[in-house]
Structures are given as structure tokens and as C-alpha cells.
Length: 606
Image 1 (cartoon, rainbow, N blue to C red):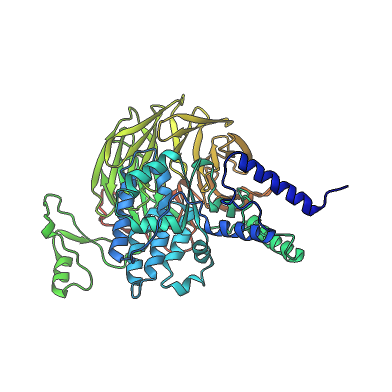
Image 2: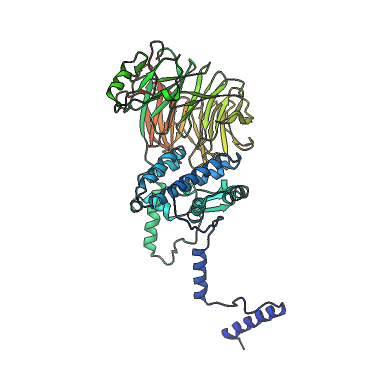
């Protein structure tokens, strides 16, 4: 005779009770059976109430404007002072903290002005990362909670947790050295409520930007759509729309081209800041020139008396609002000249040709490298030479900065690359392994790796923390002239004398595809986003590629006269090219608007 369902259930229950009794386990403590409805309700509650976050905190106090500013500044300074191998991971937290502090400040009655001041003070930290700068700018345009609903990007950011993965060592360092010992209630509250801080392999975890750009496939979550319960037609329509958005080609950037004229000396490099306002160039005469690409709203005056040492109390700023008599006196002074358009400010200090110049991400400092084997740091606002770094044995060809401006790296004829920090006079790391000159250098977006290209036809990838070579990319048939890593950090582009652009998978160390089209050496590369790549070469063309397309990667081709010195993507999605010719005009169908920063034009220099 078969046992009924009820008899089976009773038999199982009796067996469990017998098992628990034999081992002296309290039979009334656990519930031996629950209904399907109770089980479903328990799963929903566990899923909604539990936190994956490794940081727990119970918020209590009211938000204070000054306290918010102080806590963010203290946390940022603590990250800068941490050990080198902790900084790239900890820096991930600044982006969500900055965004949520700004949003919370908007919620304080009558405090939009304080929120905007906070935004303007710390905006430059994120301008070096193309994935962040557009969102940060959109965030700054919001003045109240109500406006968040009208901005899809910000609304999506607020509604979802931001994922950050830290290694166990970094998490312990953060927890024990700062969160437990510092007054940081606001930081703790945001990390607990708005950020998913997980402990694991942070380099292997993709950001939400990787998923949006289609470079990674997002894992299934507990909140995934239940296809069986949804209408199939609606699901198919949603999938089609998502595919169009994910796979659609990004918009090509606007292009502006500047041509520099110098009758006596040859310009060797050109770099534009992240806002597209200033241009810095290096020349064979050993001078660094600083230009303003947009007209100044106020007249610029310069006291050219070099023998006078000015004190702090002597410096005055005169504008059109100044007392008319004092303003006129300044204009007619024998030692002060009104600076005219089309003239650069000269930064002098190098004793050899200046081969490369860059702006640090905060757009306040300039770094230059020279034939005299020195690296120099300059203040952009007043042109002062702040530091000279020695370490290389031969001329230095290239320089690059990480995305937040904590460190920069240089490559030299001595076959080495070196890692520097602005406030330390000696190199932090020396990368040795190339068999020829290091001609180009760049950072991975996470700051943990440095990539170098050499005339030995190889590209090497090094760890910033312990200077180990973890990847060697071979395949070029000539000198490697430039290397750039995409904003997503998973692929890199290299190019050189063989006229080809190679796209590499950094994880697997293999070529994904080759971009062909240039008829002469390719000299410059720059990424627009994780799909859009811009290149320039000696064939007098600038080409824009979509690296995700199949056989038709080339999107646009622009022809220009002269030799390309620099190619930069600004925060306004504008591609700016700097060329060297015998003419001093701008080629984007506008009159030349190069205005000086602070210097005057002399007859001896152009």
C-alpha cells in the first residue's frame, strides 16, 4: 500500500524530530517547516532589507554645510597621504561622495549657493576622467531636489547604489585608519546608504560605465525582470531599445584646429587644458609658452620691471571697476604695458629644447620635460617655476599625468620611465626593461598602471606600486609613437611608424583589431569615450574611428596643413588639434583669438 502525501510529510517530520532529539537539539527553536507563501515573503524581506555593503552605519545628526566641506576635504587629504598602493583604490570613493554631498546640500533650505560653491571648489578633481566629467557638469546645473527628476542621468545615479570594490588590505586600511578614528559621520552615512562597498578583486570588477557602454555583460541580479510573468511583446520591445542605445555609434566630437607661428624657433609640442581655455607649447629655444585660446573679459597688464622685488602688499588687481584715476595711472605707467592679442607668456628655466608639456588635471600646474634631462613644474596663474626634478641621465621625450593629478610619469632617452609626485624631488619608481628610448607614456584610468611605448617596437605595462612589468605588447614594425588607454580601462590603442593603429585587450594581452587608413606615420591618439578614438599623423589628416564597428570603423576624416603637435579632447566634447605652420591663424572658420595670459610681446621673441 502506497503512503499518502500527508503520511510522507509526517514521516519526514518524525525523522527530523528523532534526529534532533538524539543530538539534544532544542526542537522548538527552529521552525521545521514553512508554507510556500511564508518562504516567498521571507526571501523578499531578506533581499530588500539586507545590505551587501561592507560598511554599516546608523545616521543620526543633521547635515551641516561647513561640516560637509570639512569632512570631504579631510578625507581627500587623507587619501593623498596614504601609501601609494592604497591611493588608486581609495580614490574611487571620491566620485560618489562628491556627488551625494552636493545632492544632500541641495536639500538644505536656502543652501543652493553653498552647494554650488562646494561643486566649483572640487570640480577639477574629476575633469581628467571623460566618464565622470559630463555627469559632474550636469550635476552642477541642478539647483534643487525637484530638478533631479528632469535630469535622467542624475535621477538614475540617485536611485541606484554606486558599486566600489576594494581589496581586503585597502578596506582594513580605510576602516581602521580613518573611519574608526576620524570625525566623518557624513562620509559614513553616504558609504552606508548610497554606495555598495565590497571586498574582493577591485581590478576585476567592472563599473556601471562599463556596462552602459556594452564592454561588459552585467550579471543577473535579484531584481532582474521575470520574463515568464511579463508580456513577451513588451520585453522584446525593451530589449530592442536597449540594444539600439547600447550598440548605437556615439556622436562625433566638434573639431577645432589651431596653427602656431614662430618665425625664429620651432615649436615641438602643444597641449590644451581640460576646459579648452589655455594652450601650452614647448620650443627648441628651451622656453615654455603659455597662450589663452579665448579672449579675456578684462584687459591684462604686466609690469615688466624685472629688477623690482614686489611684496605681497604691493600686488593689486586693477579692473574696469577700479577707481578711474588709479586705472588711468596704471595704463600710463612707464613700467606697465597693456598686453595685446596673439602674444604668449614665456616660462624660462630649461637650458635645452622642451619636448613635451602637460597640464595637471586641476589645471593649475604645468609640467614640462626637456633635452637638459630635467622635469620642471610651473604655476599657470603667474608663470612661476615651482620645482625642478632631476633623475634622468639623458633627454626626456614625454610626460603624462594620472587622472587625479597625484603623480606623473616621464620617459627618456636613457631607456627608463620614472614616476614622480609634485611635492617630492626624487622619482618614486624607476621602470627599467625597454631596450630603446621610451618615446611615449600614459596612465591607466585607475592609476595603478603605467604604459610605455619605445623605439624597441614594444609597449610595456607596469604596476605603479612596485614597478613590475605585467604585460608586454609586441607586433609593431616600427617605433611606437603613442599609446592611450580607453576610459573604461579594458582596452588600449597604440600606433607608430608602421602607420597602423592597434587596439589591444589589456587583460588577455592580444590584438583585438587593426585600424588602417593613415598613409604616413601616426603621431597622436586621444580617446573620446570607450568607443570613439581620434588619431592624427604626418599625412596631414585627423581621423575619428568607432572601434566597436566591424569593417567600417572610420567615421570622419579631416585634412589640415602643417605638422600636428598635440591632440586633446576637452570637457565640452571638442577635439582640439595644435599644428605648426608658417601662418598664425585658427582654422575653424573663425578669426584668431589667441590672447596672452600675462606676458608682453617683444621684438626679439615671437
